[in-house]
Structures are given as C-alpha cells and as structure tokens.
Amino acid sequence: MLILGTGDAGKSTFIKQMKIGFSGGFPPEELEHYAHLLRDNAVQAMKTLIEGCEHHGLKIAEKYAADVVTVQKADALNKDSAKAIKALWKSCEAVKTCFEEYESTLNLPSGKNASYFFQNVSRFIEKDFVPNHDDVVRARGMTTGVQETIIKGEFKGKRTEEFRIIDVGGQRSERRKWINCFEGCDAIIFLSAINEYDMQLIEDTSVNRLEESLNLFKMMTASRWLNNTPWIVFLNKSDLFEQKIKKYPLKKCMEAYEKFISDEENIKPLKDTSDFAVGVAFMEYLFREQYCGESEQLYVYVTNALDTEACLNVFRSLRAAIVDEAMGVMGN
Image 1 (tube, rainbow, N blue to C red):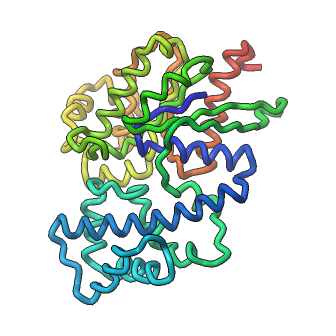
Image 2: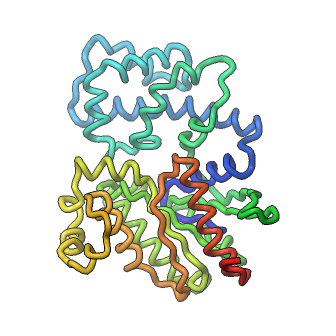
C-alpha cells in the first residue's frame, strides 16, 4: 500500500498507529528518536507562538520577558526552557490568545495539538523519560524521502498477513520521488486534513491547503500509473474539523459549500444533518468530484489519526474491501 497526501495530512501518524496495533509498538532506538522530537516540538511550538504574538501585535506582559528570552535562546528543551514554556502557556494571556485566534496561520507543529507538548514538558525532560503511545503519535517530524513499514496482523481469524506500507514526503519538494513507488502498488491511501480549509501551504502561503490536496488527488488519480489502482481517501483530522467549523463556518470560508447545501439531492440522503455531518459530506463530495481513476474502487473514510482503535478499525475495514476482493474471497 502506498500512502500519499500533502504535508501535515497525518500520513506518518497513521503509520505509527498501524505499528502500535499490529507490530507491537516501537524499538528502543525509535522511542529515543521520538523523545528528542517531542522536546524539539515543544520548544519550536512556543517560539512560533512568541513570533506570532509579535506579528499580530499581542503584547506579552513584562513579567514574562525573562521567559521569552529563555525560550528564544533555547536550542533544546531543558529544565529552564521547560519552566519558561510552562509559565507562558499557563499564565500569559497574549500567548493563549495567539494560540486560540491565529493557530491556523502559524504553522505550529501539530497545530491545535501543540498544547499537548506544553502540558507535558515537565515529563519530557525527566531523566528516564520514555515516550508512551500518545506521545509518539503526536510527535511531529517532516517525512523526507521514502519510508517503508512492514506490518503483520491476523484478520477474521485467518492466517497472519503481511502488509508493506510506503510513506513518502508530502511537501512539494518531495513529490518528484513518488513515481519510484508506483510500480506494484495494490492500493493507495490518500490522506487529507479536512480542518485545513482555511489554511495556507508552508511552501507557498498564496495557496490554500485544501485546494492543494484536491488538486494533488485529481492529478494522482489521473496518472496512467495509478488510475486502475483502488483508492482509499481518509478525510483526516475530523476532530479538529468538528471544533473549527463552530468558529469558522464553512459557508464563510468556501463558496462551493453554499451551492452544495442548496442542492436538496446532497442533503436528502443524510441521516444526520448537523453542521459536522453536512461538512463531512461536503468534503467527500469535493474529493469524489476530483476523482479521475478508472477503477470503480474509491473508498472514503472519516478519520482521526490520533485515535488508535478507530484507525485500526478503518484499516481492518479497508483490508476487507481491497485485499479480499483482489483475492476473490470477498464474503468468505
């Protein structure tokens, strides 16, 4: 299986969940890597918030001046920088306002989940700190090149099956490497972070992230190398999407949404007509509209890559749909 998507869509997080669920977790050397990454995430996220305060004219109270300097000078998370981060996060109104109001434009590591880093800095600097599963899935590092993961699992009591999952960097500069992974691919998982409908690319701030994801999906499904391959779309970060639409309604951010909801044929099939359910239906509609593949196998799932059990259930479901059908044993 090949996993594609733009940067920050959650591809690596999903693979981590597969390793937790089917491969028993992570060896010590990987956990050590994630420990370093978590410490770096905490420092970089707070530095980004401090810069955001300056950019948006949010004055940080003088009593936090020393904490600001400590964080700005920090190359790594240590006792002093952890203490400063805790103080700024817990009590500094400017920092909290910046996080709540401008998170979408700041390109914070893990976005809204950056708060997790701040809340856990004391634990991260403990001498014997070993990341747990929640820590690992939240650790943020840019994927570069091609990374292969082998997972094994039993499905429906059958013999153990092995899956080779290939993850490739999602940033524009990494996509030229994708073609090397296309041959022999049995299925493609495409992740899109649906909470990014009001956000811009890190590489090009003039481009909306959701539009980039839709354009990339269209281009990939039209590829002669892939258009006969089954596609699975993960509408990811649904938890953040549900939170965001309460504050930034889709109808105020996307012109196409008004047209979608005005068509009764789009709304009539929905059992749930809450803003979240209709919003998810709209996102699915957008991706189905862009699909150019010749294969009739297009599956769409709503996902939250931070939810281990939900990810495992989705994988079991798509495995049944894709693998069993390919083997001619569907329903057996």
